[in-house]
Length: 397
Image (cartoon, rainbow, N blue to C red; front, side):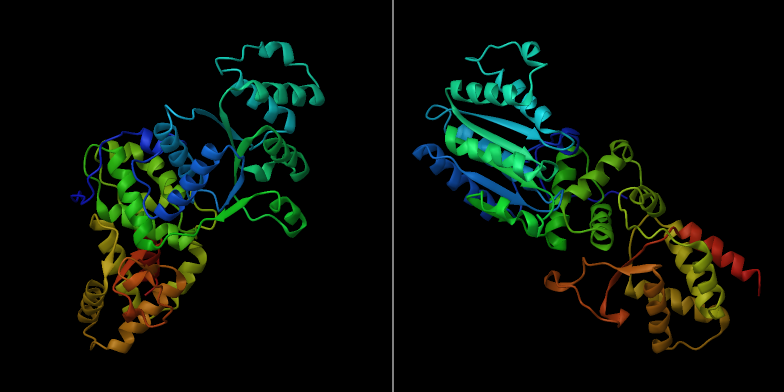
């Protein structure tokens, strides 16, 4: 099912999701943060004073993309005025020696530096540090060091870089993927500016992922599929674009060929993306179904049939009620609104259905036990798995 997107963006290609340093043409819902960092760094360049800046937030929330976008704009805006060099280093799984050697490798690319990296391979820690300081002095440009994932470096080691930055007039921008412990609060005091990025609302995250999909593919992508991915992120993770981009990478082969991705295939793909994904316990689910009355079992059978036979990811309240009415007619039961409500409450409680947030007004999550409060729902288990369990219970009647 392909729907026409309302978002018009220049086609970029797979780089838009596979390049970890990709910078989108526009940062959605981060204008305030973008303008703030641009202003601070532009003043820093103009007035020649170094800064230590820290961005905090869970992985995938957008720390790197804000930094990269601002630095890219600064390079363009100051190309003929105050040229500067940026060096981006990922601290993940690096000890201090490896970190310094990575910095020296990048510094050696500067036109006025020409030293043989092979000659320093066997250097000890003290020698590497002195070589790094000397190389930094010889850079005839404003130098920006961007350290990502500094939680992998011991605070006492990283402080050396922060102190050196002040000494050598180097601006250091760091990102950390988790909040630092109380025991390292003195570490925080070394930063001049600290920023913690907030989570996105459902509509904001959906818009970001819709935009990224339109940048990646030359053809239109099913809008409902992206909404479903957004709902799964809210259900099983925290609302950050990075997790949605990870999922887009996994389903890229399907979308590239313009294949229809069925509901159960998406659930199977996402089981590998979420540590807390509720992979259904068939034994407990089977016990639940076996203890329900015949009307509920027939309703679940109709529900599984609805999701397995139609190429969609959602069902609205109206169609849920139609499934209930059909179930009542098959048994010649009278319809009862309270009974319908109880059935939906049970399917929500055991994790067969979940309410979508796309229909909630003002992006406010309604904490209500009344299922009639919600308008749109999605299945959180494989409909074929549910069908098999229902069939097994039917055999016992």
